[in-house]
Image (cartoon, rainbow, N blue to C red; front, side, top):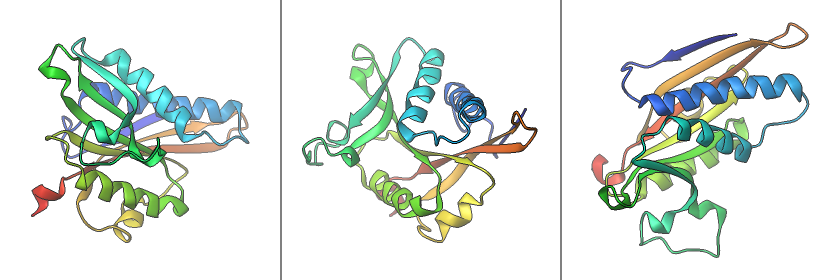
Length: 194
């Protein structure tokens, strides 16, 4: 098993997020070697990565899953618990520190070619969010080899850049080579682009 990360700036993501991504890639390889014919669902990835990140967070911060967007941006109207109206997870300060300020917002996606429009929609949604300077990210997990940047760029050329990439390679039980990768996309707010 090997692990490789690529970034122009090693400090681009805090260590607790890098640890979460590294852990989730190993976890996916492990799960796939046991349950070869079962797809790993996005919800399972979110649950596992938040457990890993939580173990590395400072005591002043907390992680919240399925966090409603209208608690981040009050101008967003709630649509009866609509799934698209919630961030997969946020990292925020506890209430007694900085009044519970949200530091980072994450959407997690499993990469498949037919999900490109959904990923592009999340890029637009996060860019338009009035989030009081919270950093916004999409974490895309893929299996196999893919040129994610090219795929997304052709569908949504604005307001994003892949800032971090991690890859793992595994030999499964039959000796076949398996690949998993994670790409972190940082989204710039629309107001910052003008």
